[in-house]
Image 1 (cartoon, rainbow, N blue to C red):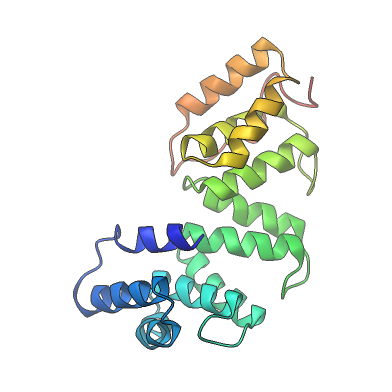
Image 2 (cartoon, helix red, strand yellow; image 1 turned 90 degrees about the vertical axis):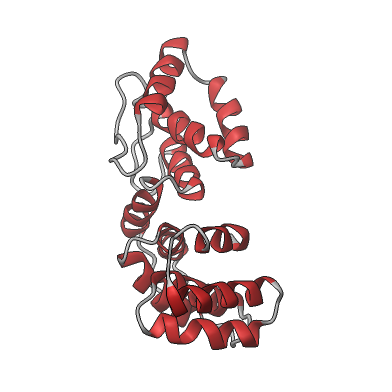
Length: 204
């Protein structure tokens, strides 16, 4: 997650002092100079910068530069998540799923995972894939949707998704595989993910 977080900081086209502070904070975080990272990131987070909110949330979650505090981690990630920050949406989903610092709520977990997955977040796509494959968190079993989501995450190098996809193939008909491949090709980041397939409902 850390590498992903830092990578996106430099792809956002932020300008001026905010960009400088964010870059310095991210560099300090990577260099494990958490005191400097905290100094650079905190004012930006308090000013409502979603990237800084997410990074500050990570620092509280990991206990880096600050005492580990999952409630603070949730609060800062939530601020970033409602602004559309996919990494933060994934963390909020995970915290709701496990009941970490908040009451466990699998329905909310699915909602936040879906928000992140629809932005192309591979970890969120993989999490949803597992829910569809194993019929958990109130999700219907649908091997085609599970394969599609693994396919999308695998395209971004998600190793577990690659393994899941290989395992799923053994349970699927050729018709199901063809439908999943077609759905993967036709889906674009930023658009809704399908919630059911024609051939995969209930498994094979």
